[in-house]
Length: 137
Image 1 (cartoon, one colour):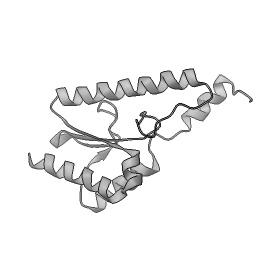
Image 2 (cartoon, one colour):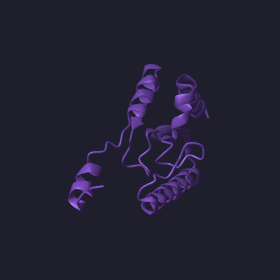
Image 3 (tube, one colour):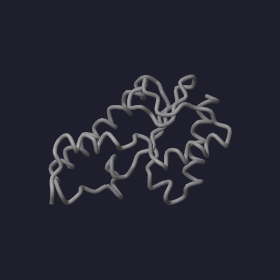
């Protein structure tokens, strides 16, 4: 195996988009259903995938790999120590972000990537219902 230099690795990592195809598909479906929101709001902790500040609503779409899903999450076979540390750090960060929003009185929803793979429309319905219910409260 040929190892990349630190500079090559940095360039590779910078090229990774922070927004997934799944996120784009979910957001466009919600938009078609008439819901209005902001995406990847940098001013909010954790840069939520969907946010409605007026109603204190944030939604995170968590990928099974990066957020260590108990069902589908796994540690790659190479460089296991790095990945174990990295994915554990992600999980701790997710927990802190969730606690932060709950403490501030925000409505937070986390939806797993596998929920969309199992039944895309049902997962989008769940987000739509969550947003509509919280807007009424």
